[in-house]
Image 1 (cartoon, one colour):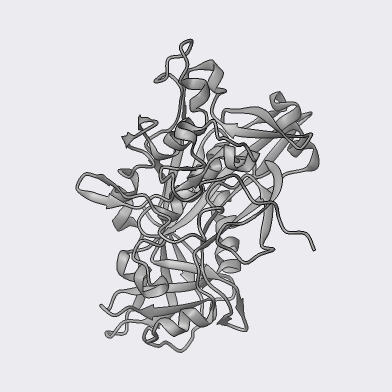
Image 2: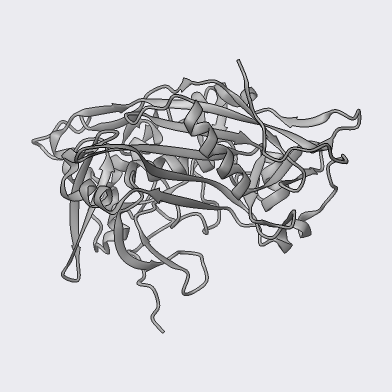
Length: 393
């Protein structure tokens, strides 16, 4: 069954074919792959995640801390502490989001629909949910990254190195939805081969997601995943795009509070681009391709589930000097570097999950105690030394 979410203020509008553009259109918008994040939790709930985790009802999580230049930085991650040496499986839900465009039609006059349900099997059989061979173990992608950063703990004589995992269950597909995108909230374009993609107002899609959250029957002990196909997101002004391109985000928000206990829902949203659309937008067929954006968000959900792990302020690799942040976002520190994906072949299909930064990079640890002294994983060549502090003026 498919539900349709109707945009507010829907009116009959003039229609047009997808626009014909070249790479200069996206270049003029500063088209680079990027992600965002949100935290909608009270100050008390944020404090409880590290100080009194028993007051948080959410996915299983553990808290540790590191010290940098005399300051203590606590952090929370999804799963169980690696010292426990046991496996944790996190339930996941999956919602494919198709897109129906009021303004744009095909050559026969039919409204263009970008159908996300056609790639459901491809997503659910990806390295995010099925095992592949990594140097940190035969396991899922996000778990391989976590095992790499805690390899100094799990690879000891007193621990079964194969016993500690944080796994995502095979996603339960919830009711697919179709989002009706009104005029002025998107630009639909045609790639060289005739395949269509869309640049959509990110504020519009966030408002639609806020509605869907209320209708899909989510549970705080599971990670819901909402995914679109062949769409990227940016800000619009007066119906025109002004920047590009967000490929997803992860968030944590409170669903209720019972006395002193906070119920916190995690949430992941991402796009999946066909290689031709990725190449058309970015000049790189792997950018946001298949599970590239989704792996970024899921790995960050595992390493910073409540979007509140504060670390020393660092310069973002590959970004302009002074572009900095101070959160443990493992994908953000890779996304500005070229060739950020790590090809993994399953079922005859080559996926492109994104390499992630490791905890040791954010800790400023030298040498790194991660697997093979790495600072990034699975591609250990992306980051070869600890973070660079944000330049001060």
